[in-house]
Length: 124
Image (cartoon, rainbow, N blue to C red; front, side, top):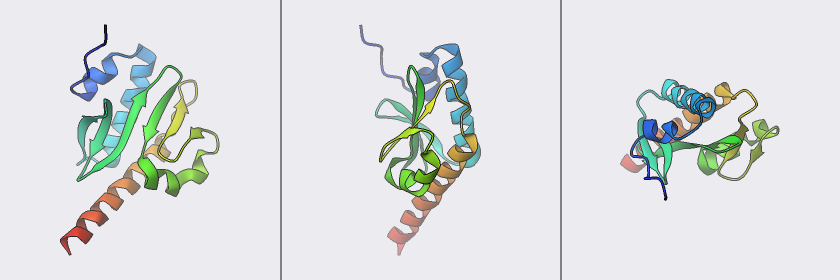
């Protein structure tokens, strides 16, 4: 039987093993600290943080935490992903390695700044 889709980030995190829950909570707190005004949402079945648009998504898996800053977030920081698996829209942080919380912070702030720039341009 398929599990019901989570309605909030707490429900999403609760379905994982305790150690993974701790890592997901670290990512969540790091994003909150980076952009306190961002709202938590579930989008595409994953936790996400939204300002005017979605800034970043994150997700838990059996062997890694997926972090999804989408194209511009990946492109701007790709030089720092050399030790991780990554693609044009995502980076994977292995569960057995320390999370790069500083990198997550910088990417999230970058995405928030880009989001605000887009809003300002639309108002002009």
